[in-house]
Image (cartoon, rainbow, N blue to C red):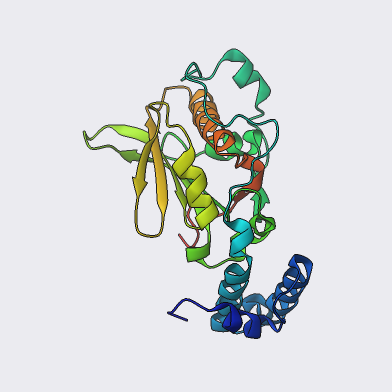
Amino acid sequence: MSERLTREQAARLLEVTLPCADGQLKRAYRRLARQHHPDRGGDVRIFHQLQAAFERLAEEDAAQPVVTRGRPSRMPATAPRTPSRSDLAAIDLDLAIPDRPTPLRPSLLASALARPHPAALHPLHAVSRAPGTWLNRAAAILADDLTSTVDIEVADDDRGRQVVAIEVTAAARRARHALDAVALEGEWIRRRRTSTVQLSSSLEPGTDRARTAVATTVRLVRLLEAASWPLEQWLLTPSANGRPGH
């Protein structure tokens, strides 16, 4: 549907009566999403309508960012710019990369980046919905305009130098709020667009592939912790070069 759904339209699509409890809404969405999922022979258009309907009814709860207790609200100004020996020692770079969408953790992220590739690092793509939402577990099957993304690849900067480019792009309202509020600390650039907020950063790849992978991991982890959107809420999506369908 091209126009924004009303609450009444969304309720009819999900076959619920307003007002409905949060648990009732989730159960209705899950039941219909399983029925109409494209992988089960369902109609893609109906599946996306159900996603939009759920988002419409759930958006009041998603209006405020979820704050994860015990995590910093912003990056410390003294955060190291390169990985320390303890950073390197804490991250296992020899993990096997799953062939299915998998929740990220620092060692898996660094291992995925350090895989063999002609570039200084292997490209990587990960998806999430927004901080703290249960939809993060299903982010890999949500419509593109409903998900947030992390993309990491080696690219040329505006001076023609090769850099490791990191982009975090938020689409959902809660996700945009999280990236809007985070402190950049000189490492990130924020770009606000009509329906997304994007933070980008770059670092020079070193001659040591493992150290470059860990440095990239540390930088991204610091940002996501500052946004109360920990790495574990993102799904690594397997593909040949980091981006689905390529």
